[in-house]
Length: 322
Image (cartoon, rainbow, N blue to C red):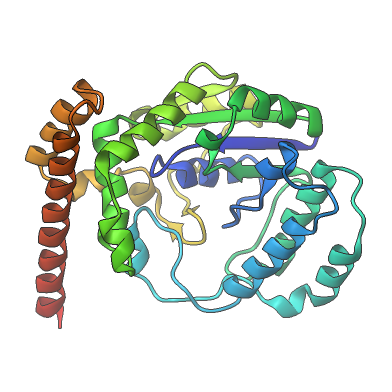
């Protein structure tokens, strides 16, 4: 049976871990995002616009180059050897036929797009049941999710929704870590905690009461992989649990990670934002609900100070390694 699993998250909420676990249930797990699916569903792109075709061609081209990808965090991503994930030569003819084809539905276009990428993969042996795909969303707060969810149900034969959640305190710290190490200086400084909280709240309000299964960040690590598997598989009406879940490596967005590493929250091992900063965010941003512009400015300054301290610490570590 064709079935799409939509994994909703916003920022670092371990969606790639869920995707890796879904792979053991027969779903295609590949490092592909931002295909424009929501824009198609909401009528912002027509079926014959060619956007998804162009997007997957660009992704294939980029993934054919050696690069860093995946892992449990941005720090883990950097601690690996650059590698390509696909071979364009494997799908050149298929790509041209795919680009020329007139698709009759969004589902047909989406499935063909994911299948095309799967044929080009070289970093692993791809094994999945036809029509079983995973959509990792990144833009839920931009839409009326009630309408978006209905459009999913109208366009796909079978859709299941998994909504991930995480406490703001740990979420903002992990989100900040991504900006700390960003190669562009503008992205490192254009991080405003109160704005991030606004976006975080939009996501929470949008998905908390939505149809589907709600998973807390702690559930992924505290339930135990067997119970977590059963909970998800029962909801999806999926297969019985295999016996080797603790013995296999999990593909987390293009990088294989051992069970122990995958199911241990990496962020808990690192200090990104200081406890003083996090306490200040709680007081000025959450409790005051953006009523103090000065408080929001001070929150940004605290973020900048933490960022500089972190980057200096990393430079010192790199010098020691050298």
